[in-house]
Image (cartoon, rainbow over all chains, first blue to last red; front, side):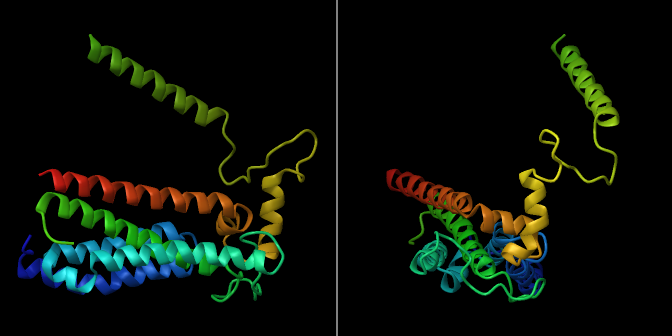
Length: 144
Length: 99
């Protein structure tokens, strides 16, 4: 896959930051507005996949490799479990909200909910990119 | 014959849906309350709607249910996603090796 024409590349390059920003916004405001980690992660993954399709797999692989996506996915999952263990460490139950709640409606509020959603968003985005990579490599035979 | 039968089924189900929506559903804009016995206010959904912002500090009630009240369930969802990704990567790697 060598990438597409100049028109598609330019549009993809211009759209990528906005799509990525929108996904990040959906993830980070998961505790305030509708959305959250799962849809936000999918939007972030879609923005990256759009770049892959426009520029070809060789150039995209230098930015986000297979190993990067694998590590990011595991880090996202681990972050959720570690945040849950904070509750046990402080003598309450698993996944208990142990951080200060803050004022309702602010970005830095609701204790560990935004952090958990950040972990979920990372995990979903990296996981979908990983699925995309796996399918590409299966039919193309590139090196991972 | 099969096509006529299918069309008839679609029409019947459609009519049933329209009938149900127009008669049995809540009026537009009304707030759904679950009735358990005589108590309106003591149902779990009502309790969560009233107490979630104070207990979890999240303005979005869905989020406070997803990660606040039912965190284990969402952890399971994340595990399902992880398993799915691992399965897809495994299957496609085996696929590649065989070619």
